[in-house]
Length: 251
Image (cartoon, rainbow, N blue to C red; front, side, top):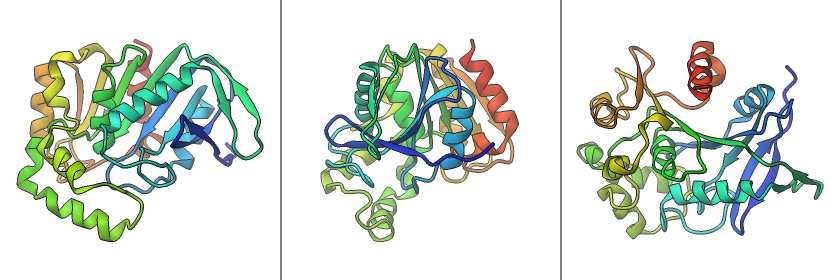
C-alpha cells in the first residue's frame, strides 16, 4: 500500500487534527488519542486504518503541539467530545487547499493508548461515541502517585519544551484524579462500549489497577504477557491486534 501524506484540518476554533478519508466509504470514523508525552507520529497507522475503510483523525489536544489553548485547563476527554460534535456536522476543510469534504459518520470510534486510553474511556460517556479501544490505558490516576508524577511534569517541561502548555493547577488536577479519571466515573461507563488491551509486564502503567478496573466495570480485557507498554502504532505492526479490534467493532 502506497503511503499517503496526511491532510490537516481545524476542529472548532483551536484544535488541529491530521486526517485521511477512507479508501472506500463506510460511514465510520476513528479518532486517535495520544499518550502523555508522545510524539504525534501516526502516519503509517492513519494510512492503514484509512485503507480499511475508516475516516481517521489524529487529534492534538488543546494546548498541545499545533493546537491552541491551554492543556489540562479542561479534561482532554472534553476535547474528544468536542471533536465528535464537530465531525457530526459533516463538513471538513482540508487546510492545504481549502477543499471542503462532506461526510456524515454513522459510527464514531475512539482509540487511545496510555494517557490517551484514559481520555478515550472518559470520553465514551458521550452517546455519540459507539466504541472505544484503550491500549495500555491509565485506569486510575490516583494509582500512579507512588510513581512520582512530579517527575513526569518536569520531564515534559524540559524534554517537550512548548509542546504541552499547561499551568501548575492543571497538572495538580490531573495528578489528583480530579480532572479526568476513569475509575471515578466507572458508574457512568457502558461496559459494552469499551475494549481494553494491556500487557501484564507493563512497567509504565501497571497491569493490576487496570485489571481491577476492567473487572469492576465488566468490560472486555485482553491481557497480553510480554508486550510491555504499548502504543497505538502496534495496531499497524501486529495483525493479531487488529483482528481482535475488528471483531469488537463489528459486535
